[in-house]
Structure formats: structure tokens, C-alpha cells
Image (cartoon, rainbow, N blue to C red; front, top):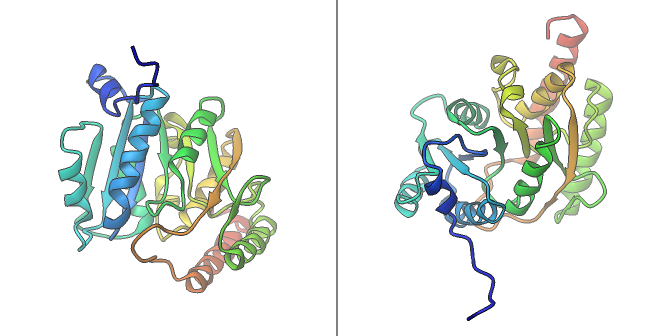
Length: 258
């Protein structure tokens, strides 16, 4: 008899608990991520199966011309825990995340990027943390976190200091977009005030969570390089947009409109 450790069946626990609420919904917004999405979903299935979690993976695709959505449907047709939503109108990162969250059913909701900047192993860790607090947040700027691109790391670090001083946030990384939140806490927030624009939705979410006195824990995460495809983010242009939003939001807070 072999003593080798058995590899968990990624869909086994989901099959055994058909119809039960998932422990976790992982929302994956995509646009032209054909090179990354299959290995990402495979690793997420494996990682969450290893901890015995009933998972639901929700891929929210903005009509990617590279066939991202079709590839996921084909590859994971036998796994009811993997769903694909193809959005037909109003494209954008924040609204895609909102649609994924609104269609999710898990007790905890995890949101992450699909280019392997956000590692599946860290998604599991942030999920486990969220069992004990309202909101678990991936941070590059606490001990143990970081980025392989040092220029972007230091620029992002300085920008986050600016955001903390301007907006009064208590988080070290206001732009990671990598988080896990209890379902009931997520749906207490005003989605219309959060989910528009690009990655700026995340610092609005953090501000609103602070206003609601939610408990937070930051988890160190390390960003590597994207494994495939091309980045849709134009770094300096995005920071220009974020700065306009930070200043607008500061004014809105000061005048009691937000």
C-alpha cells in the first residue's frame, strides 16, 4: 500500500455538497486573459480543495476578443463550481467586479486579479483570515510583502503614503484590489458609491469599510510579473486618474457629500 499523499479532487467537495451555499466565491474579472485564466482557475480549484472549502469561481468577462470566456467554459464544463458571466454592455473593471459580487453566493467573497500578480496561495490565506475579521486585505507594503518591479514598488509605496495622508485611510496598500470580505458586510455597503472607474473602486471600498467600523487585517503579498498576455494598465496614466479621484473624494468628504 502506498503512503503517498493523495491529491484532492478539486471538484469533489463541491459535488458532495451540491446545492449548499459555497464557503467562498472567488470573483475573477477578465479581459484578454486567455494565457492566464486556465492555469489560474486550475490552481484556485486545487488550493481551495486542499483546505476542504466549497468554492465558487465566478469569471466575469468583458467580451474578450481572445476567447477567454469560451476557454473557461470548455475547460471546466464538468465543474459546477466554475461559472462564466459575459458582460454585454458598460465595460470596465469596477463594474465587472460589482456584477461578479452581486451574482455570487458564497459566505465569503474573494476578489483578485487574473494575471498572477495575485497568487492563489495568498487568496487562500486571505480567505482564512476573513473567517476571523470582516475584511482581509492583501498588502505589498507591510513586512513580507513586495513587488518584483522595484520602480513600481517605490512609486506605489510613495503614492499610498499620499493617499493615507489625503484621505485618512488606515491601510498601507489602498490599491491592491486583493481582498476577502464576509458576505453580509459587503452587502451593507453602498455599491453605487464604490463600483465605478478602474482600480480606484478599492480605496472607496476601504474608506466605506472604515466608516462602517469593520475589522481589518492586512496580509503580506508579493507581486511578481504577469505570466502571459499584455497588461491593460498604463501605470502613469492610471495614477493621474487616481489622483483626480483622490482629490475629488477629499473634497466630497470635506463638504459632507460622501
